[in-house]
Image (tube, rainbow, N blue to C red; front, side):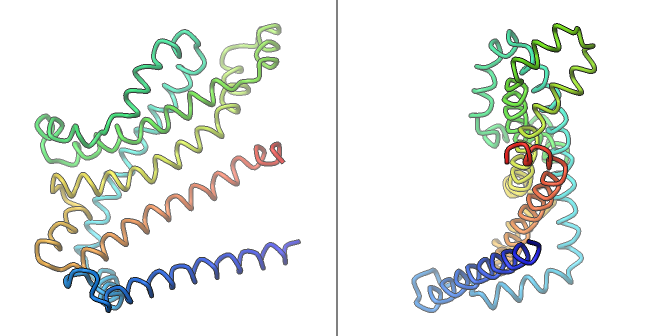
Length: 259
């Protein structure tokens, strides 16, 4: 069984690498055909820029600034979204009364608030953290509410019949029921955190990867701009992969129950 799983992993990895190689080959062919603007960098130039970024202290400083703002805002959003979601989802009256506000909030483009937020907080790291937190809040909040709603009615009735203490009910009934949904919201919001953080830096010119992308574009260093975009995507992909791996281990009981 383990041999089959390893063979499957190797085959899947090979297919993914081939897909990436095919995409890069198509990119280079399009560059050679002249279909794209002349300033568009080719694959060798981007690869060289990526290699140069590894030896640049400015790159690592910018990456650290982006990650600090993204992770801080994400942690705030996960904490607030989980607590509020459990409270709202477990109280039917509160759930019904806040549904309109939540639907409006999750549909509102947070980046549209940037001018107002910059006017209040300035183009600072605190402003970036605030925007990231607000953007990441909604996936966690909505998923947690869904999870809190999906408690088994028979289990709830049993808890009421035996008058189980509130704290024990929260630990043994509410939280396990909502945890798979919370983990989904956490994974979604983690990717959003990186994207929003880079986007805020591009728009407001706060220090980070986004600002370096803008400076590279202004200097006509398109290969460098694409290299920074590559690292932004790589970081988001890596975080999502780690969270997916952690979810598989922590929620192994849930997958076994579904099987």
